[in-house]
Amino acid sequence: MNAANSVPSNHLPKPTLYLGQHPNQPIQLYRGFAELIKGEQVIEGQATTIFGWFPSPCVKFEFTHFTPGAN
Image (cartoon, rainbow, N blue to C red; front, side, top):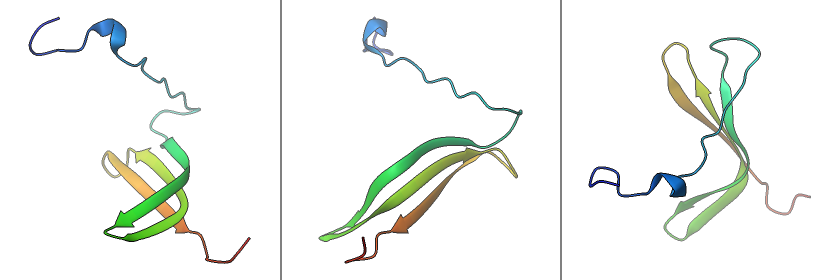
């Protein structure tokens, strides 16, 4: 352990390997429940986070809010 890396290597999380069918296809990083919070306002919904390659590498977020009172 040194000053540049203060966490012992045996305490680091194991990396996740994402396998795809084809090179350069988008990678889904997360899909599930999420909250958007701004001050006192909280909006609940479903979120998807995707790493995309084209037109340049980027992270894309999609969020669909739950309709109040809907089941």
